[in-house]
Length: 196
Ligand code: 5GP
Image 1: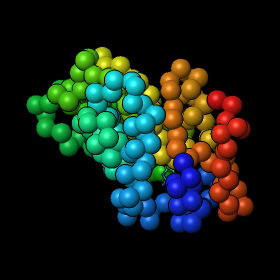
Image 2: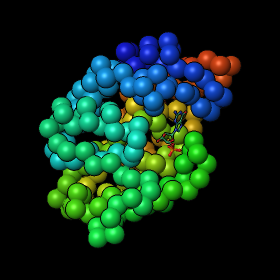
Image 3: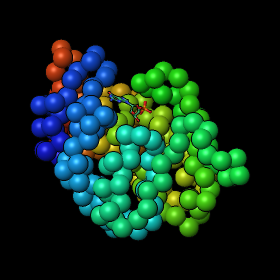
Image 4: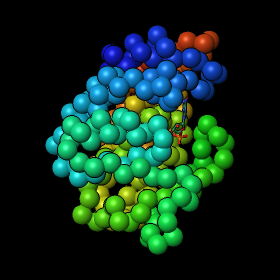
């Protein structure tokens, strides 16, 4: 997605060979126009999948998810990272090792909002080692719902997550795929290079 790639080039800050900071449009300040376009792109890619719900994780997955949800006319459920749900809820949970915080978190969704009749699109902001996406996929499975695929705003394809998820047979659609952050420079994986 050209608009997103341009934004990453112009405003992304390479913090290390592994980490890209995009606080000016995705992780702190949100570029609502860009998110609207991101939402349209996710919706176009999954429009024939009969999606009934988008599942994401707080907090940075929420903006792109809401935009895609408006296009697909479905609700968004975001997994919570802390046990902030009331104890009366029956929780679907997964354990996720956070790439950025380097700590294990339990993520949880109430079974009130995800059921076996749902067809789910999982969305997240970044894909690194795939732990967040896998945790969300586990929650979808616990609910007995079916998973249509995973939409990612920015995939770092030099890390293992994309390969791992695709090898499990999951459909992963990433709107920008970064092949390297070396030498303080963002290099994108072109469509023709994307073997998987
Ligand atoms: P994973 O679970 O795939 O290892 O990591 C994905 C999660 O870690 C995302 O939800 C995102 O919050 C965070 N993350 C991973 N890599 C980056 C990065 O390079 N920059 C930012 N801002 N967040 C990242």
